[in-house]
Length: 227
Image (tube, rainbow, N blue to C red; front, side):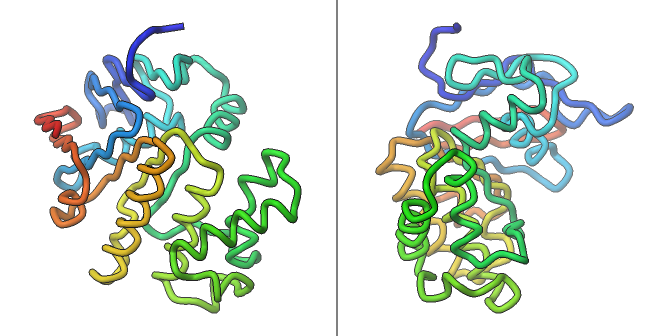
């Protein structure tokens, strides 16, 4: 067990795709309850960095520590289990299961963790209500707008009270008003739960809602500003 204040930490993290180095020897610590924006030009490695922090992408070198456990040393199944139990993830297009209703999508993490269906549905409806889409709970993704799908995706990421929420351009496909509402909810819910929030974004308005800033260029952390 490694001591330290970070809930999620990369040390010397390097990710390669063939001959291309997408993330190059990055050191980054995410404190509990912190709210961090990750910015950088297209192709800078910011999305790869966040996916590596989540254990989705395995590094070529370096270490990833999550809640005092070395995440990159675990097998794929165990990494998936840790993500499901203690992380929330949001992508630009939501990635919901189209055959399920919104509430069924939000219930999924809880049910996989063994929560009974009635309790899971009640908690999922609470989260959908917090994001303003509880009235659409029993509709499938094809029957609602893209912004409403994304709100449900955020609800799914938050429903199981994760220690860290990692979001890759979560507002990129939304209009400015919806984007602000979704981001405000993400910030308020994670703050209330004491969870860390890490958001990849190209939008300075989105970044202004967060406290810390990490700027990535050419796979390296070029700048770090902590409030």
